[in-house]
Image (cartoon, rainbow over all chains, first blue to last red; front, side):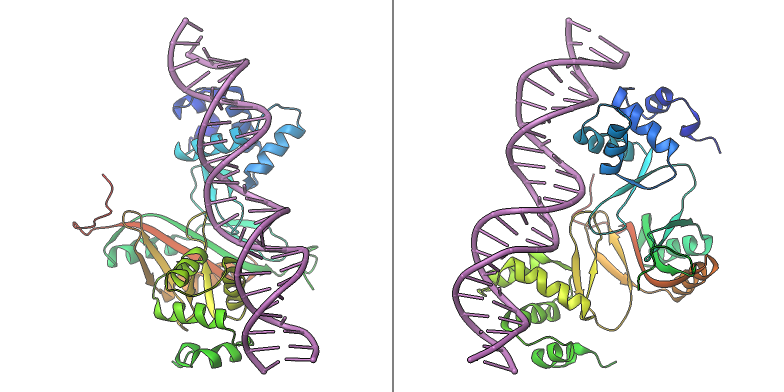
Length: 147
Length: 147
DNA sequence: TTGCGTGCAAAGGTTTTGCAGCAAG
DNA sequence: CTTGCTGCAAAACCTTTGCACGCAA
């Protein structure tokens, strides 16, 4: 699949309807290099730590713009902080380890289909969904295991 | 099914390991009367509007205690405000209308089962899950319909 | 009585906003 | 040049916490 991330930063921004300013390039580049799910503050910190000049307000504004343009997805895994990940053209849901915080992405067509069916049965057109599983990994060497 | 809500307030609280104070009784009673999903602030406001004397801090503390005792469930449907609903012994997920905000509860055993299977296949034991569908209702008379 | 629970106010963390200056096209 | 974007600081918002007082058992 040919996704936006294959284009150079400037073109990727332009085709999303955004002018290619330096802060926007920086945020987009960071998200492309990362496979993690980053909070706004983590994005800000990493850029500052890398010697870049950017403000936290711009990070929030840019991430919101990226989300509206479909460039990134926003998730609210815990109740406090939102995290963002680059839209890579492959929809997926998330499984989070309650011990070590590891985030695993998965996709299940059966669940996807049932969701649509359920919405339809209830008289709705499915527009979006949020599915997060919380579990405990069975790795004996999980360094974050509690207890 | 015989649930906690069938008991008088005091007994319900006691069997949850909580002393039966007036604020706790008030919050529990409100949640029992309500079938809605209420935010902490909504709980606070409704009690104050009803002439009761209670502080917002107590509402937050009490709702957290209720959640730890399994008396209520906490949901984070949007990114900003948590909502609470009385645990009635029937697990369910939620479908929310993006037009009118209506919340519909549903349960689908197929999805429940697949979730467990997926977690197991990935080497995890499923502990919890959050599934929320977002859709648009097809009621022509939906007064909150946008556009 | 005795300690837990409460209310108030202040603090905490995340996100948004107002505004003057600056950069992109 | 001209408009839109940025950075800073302050505000907004939801939630938690410290503390002295008061109620439940």
